[in-house]
Length: 431
Ligand SMILES: Cc1cc2nc3c(=O)[nH]c(=O)nc-3n(C[C@H](O)[C@H](O)[C@H](O)COP(=O)(O)OP(=O)(O)OC[C@H]3O[C@@H](n4cnc5c(N)ncnc54)[C@H](O)[C@@H]3O)c2cc1C
Image (cartoon, rainbow, N blue to C red; front, side, top):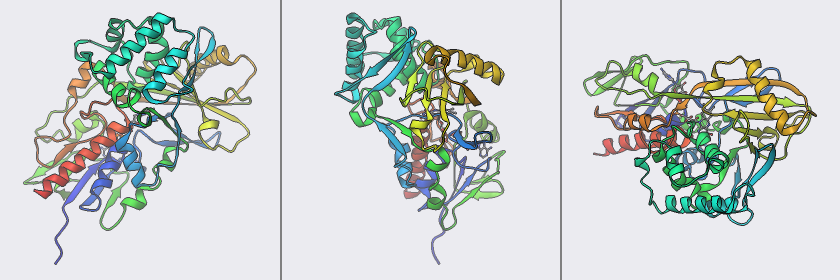
């Protein structure tokens, strides 16, 4: 008789759940419970009926430092679907004109410094102070924990309002989905050291060429073998303990990995002796729109002066094969838009677009996607609330993007925690 494999339940088929499942699938019987009818979680696709196009719930940007997320994608054959931008070529709209953060010679940290030196909006003093600040971050000579937020830290290090607005605010708000005056300096430090001030490969932008449905397409065929299962449309209400096993949906498991957002995890684990401190969440609002005229040839534009953060050129990013033009606007930390009606949001966005591109284009269709609980708010207080992946209940692990890992809420943080949970389980069994 063969040895019976141990059983693991994974709650949630987002990036964290998929990463844990990939790591465990050969050694355990793995069952994934997913509340919806699809994988991906907060990285998901929707059908837009009017345009008959598949769109994501928001544009996601990755950087080369995404080790765990890319590791998972490699396992499911998803890695060929990226544009990789090593040098800086980021147009931005500031003071009613387009400028650009451009590095023609270098990439990585030297590319960032080159782009700062080339930028004609910065004075000599601003360039010097920014380079000194970047070197200090790189040399680990700043006590990030002493500052209440990124704004205080940047001003202390002589970053002018203009440099904050053009350079740091777009970077912080888009990576942390948190305003500069709240964002955690410690998380900022990690993003800089592991990403933008790291080696070239780590700092490169990775922009998906396909929607998430396509990116994650290989998961099921890799994962679904032997006794592994995905139970779709199965929302787990609670998990209980019975001896050294966990009861999930009337089945017993040796280990459980919970990857749901913290406010759901708190509910699911309410019958176990464990406290989940739910952080504040922050919305992202995305506007997809279609025009009769081409607006730009760039991949993305930072709207420094605008009411939104970034404009993405869908024609350049994905293969749409259409004679219309399509773009996407992303606004992080979008509290100001979250409760407005669609037509009000669109007319505010259109006003900004007209300032950038003039009157000679017509918006033929738009679709607004609100993610009200997109990510946790990455401020100092919430960062301290993050639980460890390994709980003090043997066999229970809290993965998902909010468990403590030094990153903001990201695909990489989600994958890293899924990977760590899987390796705690592998170690526990090896003992
Ligand atoms: C609009 C938007 C833009 C973003 N942009 C970026 C970006 O540019 N770069 C980046 O790195 N990150 C970005 N993120 C963040 C990134 O998408 C998330 O951090 C990541 O997808 C979280 O993955 P997760 O597996 O931790 O959680 P989730 O994706 O939330 O997965 C949890 C899963 O659990 C399921 N579930 C919930 N309740 C239950 C239940 N009771 N029982 C069973 N299953 C349940 C859910 O349906 C879901 O599938 C963005 C997020 C949004 C919303």
